[in-house]
Length: 290
Image 1 (cartoon, rainbow, N blue to C red):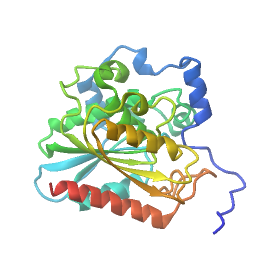
Image 2 (cartoon, helix red, strand yellow):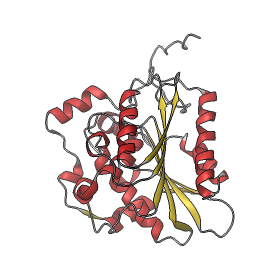
Image 3 (cartoon, helix red, strand yellow):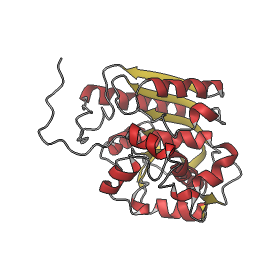
Image 4 (cartoon, rainbow, N blue to C red):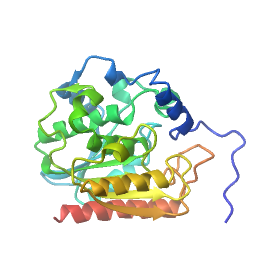
């Protein structure tokens, strides 16, 4: 089946731009990550700032519930996050949609031009949002802090993977102070959808320092994240002790599950989007039974 015709006036590109990102790193990070230049921020402060923008969906009942934190792509929080969160609730989990941009005052236009290009808020810095979210969860009576998960799409996948790769460099790379002794304590499940594993990602070079269970969904026609590098990252994570299951959707493009994506490189595939949602529900449902 031939792809649909491109619109006459395509919208802005929302995937991570490989060439711009590579150029930024080759230049030594001319526009450096804020976390590497600004004074450290206390993890409690980051957690409180993020929490004001959390979108929380949870099952009925008093709890506590296992919790999954969802991290959007470089274009910002999109509508696709809600049905995934609803799927998590159906599996018995509390779902927290983490908006990394609103607390920082990053507009969608700014995100497309600076985050997607790698000029600001790279994965290792944004990883602090995962540490802070887990910090928040451990102090929330509605959360079963022994059962926590993280899900990431594209740049959000980069974020989650870098959080697992940073090791003893977590405080410096994330720009946070006062981290918990084990900032990832309680995290045992990861769900990744077309994650960025290219320039700037630390997984291939560092490996992971936590043996989590992982489901990684890879898009076979992904012109942004590609197929080879996520698969290579998955293998490196396995070598580090993680239990990684990769699922290939051969005909899928980047953002195949986002019906609002306005980029000629992406094609929304309703059937594949539903399949991804079912996989998410099944992954969390199996984890909830353990």
